[in-house]
Image (tube, rainbow, N blue to C red; front, side, top):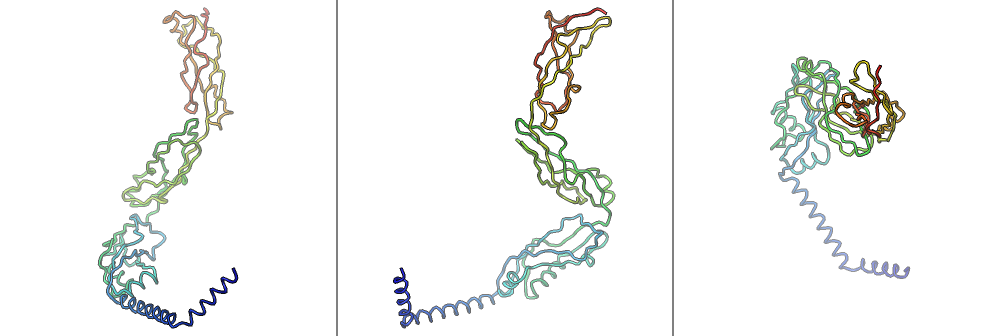
Length: 325
């Protein structure tokens, strides 16, 4: 391996001493110089390029809140010498500074077309021609009124996965936001709502960032909230529930055998230790005796809270005896 490297070095030294090698090097140098001169001449020709110019509003008082959306950038097409365009695009980031105090009055900041063109000229130089602009002018509404704090309401549809349940309230962070605007507008706003969200087959507690729905003539701050959907797994539970007899005539009573029946159902894991007995109501109807020839009465589940799922009676009928009082 060492001999091959040494042989290659020897051949390279011999090649550098040949007139052909020197001619090739001189040719490449002249090509590079010609390309450089061509590039310089080309840059001096008139050219056109597109730029994203950043918009910055300066000297804004702390008491001012903009109701209108402020565009971050303006897309412009500029014609000028190639060297100037190259300097504008490569050597610096084009931007336009707008002095709030100079262009604002009575709740509106106006930056006319001529103002914008003048500012762009100042950014790209007096020789530049602005051939097109994505923004013709700016009219930004603002307010100095204090914000009104209002609650956030989540709008959407949540579908827990099989074997899971939405346990508790859907939360937002923050739970309330500030609304800014003219008093006549803000006084009519008592809540803000999120954009519609839809979540399917959710098997665990999930948080998502959601935009708040805009309100015409008002500014919401912050404009986005974190929505947390509390999801828990379902667990099976069983309880012995007392049966209540209804429509029993005065002077009589019903003895039920058994007087309690087992009920199984599913609850969120965090509620496994809760006492649900008082929240489940089972009934038999005395009037069913006259409507049926059976010696048993049908047991009906008439009430249970929404937090329980798949409530199931282990026995849907019981024996009875009428007792005269």
